[in-house]
Structures are given as structure tokens and as C-alpha cells.
Length: 554
Image (tube, rainbow, N blue to C red; front, top):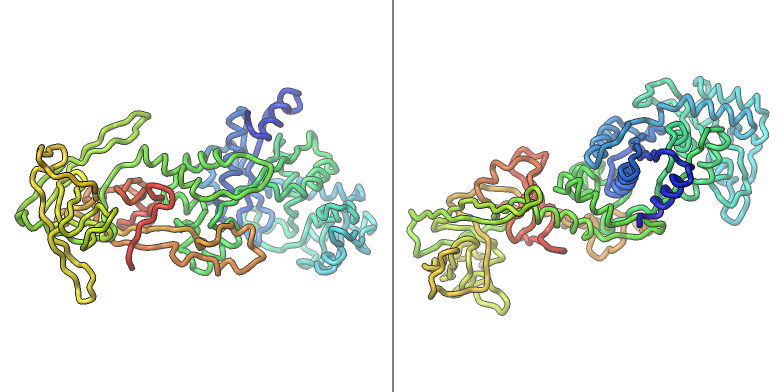
């Protein structure tokens, strides 16, 4: 059984009301797309695919003040990354149709030019319990409104001096129907139309006309537009469009512990809180992609989150689970140490160097494939600082003085002594290698131990920088910003520990890792070679398990 929109489409196709399914994704090019937009894209992509229909990417470029070609290009790239669309279109392609529709409404007595100020209009609009007050210009003669509207179009009217309003019902219980503005004067250069127009349609007027012109069969949008649907229908019916489309609303995706508002995301970028729209902490598709999320993992997350009629909030661990499952099956394994502590093997010669087979399995073309890579062991290695304690403790099965631990793919070692600096910090550990404990060649009388740790050969390793990310909002805030916009400045809720940087050591083969390549760093999590930095930087995509954190002392 499909979701409720699929049920509607099934009925429409069965009854003959719809011959071919046509859907669209209509973003405004005033910022970068985020994970919430991904759900809308994936829903429409899924509908087009399931019903062998078509999908358009149509930009709602009706407000040139906030729009930019940079955003247009970024949105096209992001949408194509998630899936293929049939056409890339712009609402501005239909400005002539929209203008002629406005003329038609004026001639039918369904629109008029008004000169009251925005403040006056706001006061006269009324409230949910109080009817609105009609403007003195509501019954302006049709010929006069026609001439004034043409003057607006021809640049004879100053910005904000006049607007065109739909003449609907000032007593309507739906505030959107109380003579809404459908055109305003805006003498601003347009990214696509240049200086051809100095009047621009409002979204609620342009949006349904775009759908009608493109013969969209099912106009899918999020729930906040439900109260706009009567105006949508009013425009396409009174605009006399053939086979007027219909709007269907679904619940938007609200993700906890992050920010789902382009306005707030832009503020983070503009104020330098993050490095840009593609900062891996950002919920933008650019940020998620740079962090290591794949298009398939995001599509899977959107599928799992479902298509509902009621808004709800989703914890980001559901998104993390999708990429974790994918990377667990497919990512190359490697050893890296992010908080290095040097260990000297005292009973091994300085000239000692042994090659060891590092084996693992990954999923390749649907089949489990065994991989083997040689690693080296010398008398000096690096381990994670948190994998050593001077004294044994209950439940701690890693390296201690007098305690045994196995080096992954190598030998068991035993801690013997350690050195500290003047502040008491451990700076070096000494241990001995236990003969007869080599992985795959363990002697019958070899000692056993419970713990296994990762490590790298100090004489044969490379330096790496690892970027470790946490959520944008602090721990105690379990609500998305959508539910607290009016409560306080969101900047006060930012997590000061959303980024930690580790200077670590890793296997030499990682120096040749291509940008965007994923790896599982043993015991640490899933990382991806940064797609922007030229130096060797690895971004942590997700931990090995939910709430898995890497501790790096500052």
C-alpha cells in the first residue's frame, strides 16, 4: 500500500481524470537546498518514476531582491545529484502569461490597483475573529485599474507606491483570501529577465499559473501551504486555465538538533559561524555531501521518514542510520589514530620491521569480497591516548602497565612503564611484544587477552587532519528550530562543540585517497576525504554506532 498521494493518483488514473502523471519541484533560488527540500524532491522523483511520468525542476524566481545565479546553479547540481529531472524551467519564463492573467482578472472585476500603505493594509486585513475592512480603492473603475497597472509595468510608478490586489472576500475566514496582493512594483535587475520587468507577481499568484502552464497533474507541497490552496484554486479557475491543477499537501521534514530555515542558515554563513553553505555541519545538501552522505542514503532516509499528513520531528540518528548501513557494507577499512600516543616496544630491535596482512570484507557489486592489504610493524607505534591507563581498572581491556592487549592484525603486547611531562601528562609508553601471539599464527601456549586496539606504525605512517562533527544545536535542545523561532535567539542555542579538529596519524596508503572516497577508520567511525581541501583532510561522516563520539583532548 502506497502513501496517501499515491492513493489519490491511483484513483485519478483509474477514473481517467488524469492521463499522465506530471509533477514538479519549485524551489526559490534564495539559498541552498537542505535535507527538508530533499524529502520534497524525493517524493516527486518517486512519483514520476513509479507512474512513468515526468518531473520538472521549476525555479520560483519571482523575487529578484533575494535571488542569485549562485543559488540557481547550486540547486540544479543538488537536484541532479539526487535524481534526474525531465526539464529545468523558471517561473519567469511565464511572466507574460502571468501579466495577461492579471489583465484578465482586472477586466473581470476580480482585481484592482490599490495605493494604501503596507501598514494600513495590515491593519485593515482584520484578524481570525474579526472581518477585514475593504480598501477605498476596492471598487476603483476597471479602466482606471487597467491604466494604473500598465503604468506600473511601464516603470511610471515608484517602488511600493501601488500594488495589484485580487478582489475576493475581506470577510473570508481564510486570511489568504482577504484581497491578497498579487503584483508589486520592484525596479530591480532580474537574473534571467534582465531589466524587462519592473513589476513582479507574488508567489501565491505565480505558483498556480506555473503549474497550469506546465499541465502539472498533482501539485505536491508541504502543509504550511494548505491554507493557500483556496487562493491557488481561485487563480487557476478565474484565470480560465484548461484542466486546472490541484494542490496536495504533505508533512514537512523537521529534523531535531539542527536548523531547517534558509534564513537562519544564511545568517550562520553571513556571520562566519560556519565556513559556508557547504560546511559539513550544515543540513544543506552541499554540507551533507561534503560530510560524506551519499545520494542513495538520503533517498533511503526520505523513504523511511514516510509521507504523512501531520507534521512531526525526526531525530538525526535516523538519517545517520541510513548512511551507516551503506558505508558499513561498502567502505574500505583503514587504521588511523586521531589522538596519538607513542608506544615503544622495548624487546624489539630498532631495525625491526615486519609486514602483516590486514584483512577485511566489503560488499562489492552485491557480493562480499575479501580484501587484503599489507601493513608494517616496527618497534615504535601510535595508539589512541584513551586506549592506555597506567593502572588496571575493572572493565578496561586495553593497554595498562602489566596488562595485555592485542594489536589489530598483529601481536599481543604488555605495558611495562611510561613517561610523563612536567604536568603529569603521559607522553610515552613502553611495552613488550609477546612472541607466539601473531594473528593467524598463535602458539598453543600463547596468553589470551580480551581487548583489541587499532594502531599505526610510527615509522611508516602519514599525518592527517580529521574533522569531527556534532549537531549544530546543544544537547539539551531536543526540538528543531521550527518550534522555537519565537522563543529566543537561535544563536544562543548553537553548540560550541559542533566541531573538533584532530591531528592524527594514519596508514600511508591513505595519502592517495581521492576526494570523496569513504573509509571506515577502525573503532573510530566512517570518514570521507574532503572534497574541497587540497591537503589531506578527512571528515567524519558518522560513528560506528548511534551516539558514537570520538574524544579528542584540546
